[in-house]
Image (cartoon, rainbow, N blue to C red; front, side):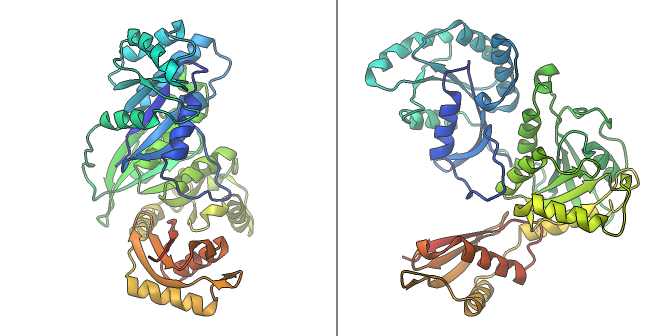
Length: 436
């Protein structure tokens, strides 16, 4: 089930990115920074009082050299399209401006909950100036200071009250997977080839796919899937034509709804920076991942072409060393029949549970072969290990002192777990905890 989405919108220079960074930096439930993963500043996963949600920073989106009011209009429209809750941010220092009223008029026409937040209220005296903002018509304004964090907790309380009720997916028994990648890598062609019928528009024009399209299908073997073809950069007119970041944003939302993500590369064009950006997000989100190299039939190949291309992928996507790679062609149907089987296997690994007794045998054997590190004469002791979650598999290792668990030894334990159990296609998390 996808998390609720909160968008921060407003005219330039009201502090949208500051408030975004304040919420994302202090309230976020985040996996550790992995070398090689490019983070995109416009989207983050956050958590407040056990309620998880996704956060969009429209201030982090570069729309280009459009006129001032056009830029505001486009940012507001993005928030209306993508968000479940909108935070309308204004600044107490400038008071109510014409641009604020322009944004307000756009938000009036939305069916989304709108919360008015007045930023830069850095001292008690400036709180008296927030009453002018009642004129915008969104009820009580919430005073905040993105720079100092004042009032952010009250704002988050109000945001979570506006979230829609959790509605379970219609059919959780289906394996949900999405295809992500740059425009024109052949995602829609792959969808049609896998389905064996033209359910999605196929065109060489970038951005043909306008919205995420879910297609349920069953295989002859009885396996049940739901396929999400990620939207292109356009949804309503030219708003989505102005920047590739919107295609990244929409791919991120599809990833949130998926069990397994197929990262589609174009064999003709090789690996681009945007490929790594979106794949990195799927990795951080903890999804099962398969790397699919499409248009493999178009290359002139020799005996080393496949191994050389695979080596390049492993170098560029070093953090996805666990992800299987499959070379396919939507046109010639090469290896397409293997994709559903591979998705099923990765999904099983993504949900795999290991009993504590077996896990501890593996960990203790690993320690016997490679003793734990020491620091200033103090040795790391591992007492007990257990699996605490799936999707992705997450393991807690109880130790005498977490500071003694070096990154390299944690990686060693992760590799030992992978050697002993089949976790192909899924990230795994190893977390150290001090034994009380």
